[in-house]
Length: 385
Picture 1 (spheres, rainbow, N blue to C red):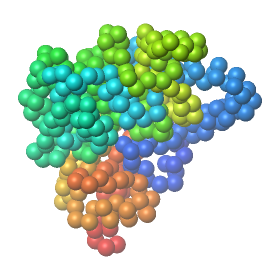
Picture 2 (spheres, rainbow, N blue to C red; picture 1 turned 45 degrees about the vertical axis):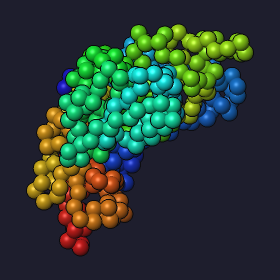
Picture 3 (cartoon, one colour; picture 1 turned 90 degrees about the horizontal axis):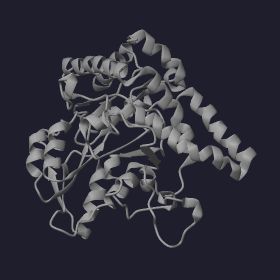
């Protein structure tokens, strides 16, 4: 059944913060579902009442949360593992690679989220050669330019599905095709797209997919995820490991690492159990609504927001074509940082990013009236009211 705007707005009562402010920042931190408090109470109760036996409940939560994410990216059950953040996830993937040979080049865009850059840049000490593809306009990176940078010495191409500053949707298919033709791996970061843009890791043919529950999935911090193409399990052996990566972790075997045969080989150490409980409700709600419905609503709201920005003479630092734009728009004008701070003081929750501007991110639970109101408030602030 195709959900309309009224059906989506009927879910507003699931998110308490929406009654206290105009919440347009789900690209940074999704609104907390009301039932998340109940889930966290379940965690506290299980610890308080069962003590160490609570691990019988906690361990399966990794797979349970992973499978909910898997449904959103077209992964099979048991193929997604949960870690604490994308920096850890990216580091585990990096630790599978050898930069000592001629194939030691890493290609990505200059508009990636900084943690991606920091992690890969640190590998220069291990022999990595980093090539960052520049953007002509600060909004998009030409896919052909990325392809041109990939050659037979390229080892990995870590790229974002949606760019965090501008909301540009990267054209993934030609990059994957060129990378694979040259023998390179593609690691796709979907943090800014999952929950608001449809994702198909098998259709895209990427080698790994990373992201987290913090943003559009309304799952809070501490629950990032990793999917790796199952055909690569035996090839990718991480050097950054933990006891849960062992095939039989409860053997406590000191003879050496025998990797799990499945995605658990990338799991590292003990899970962040409270974050698993925090993540479930948002994932369930997104699954109930379906990302296709969210995408349609998102395109409507961001198109309206983009039109208002241009009508008001603001600089739009996001693609004008809704099909090339993710879940938020970025607008800029003189003193935008200060205006962002004033908007927050007035309970219009947005954020500001340097070299970009104010990010405005309506989710399925936001109304057209709320989007109109934030632009009216920006106009008031610019006019000194």
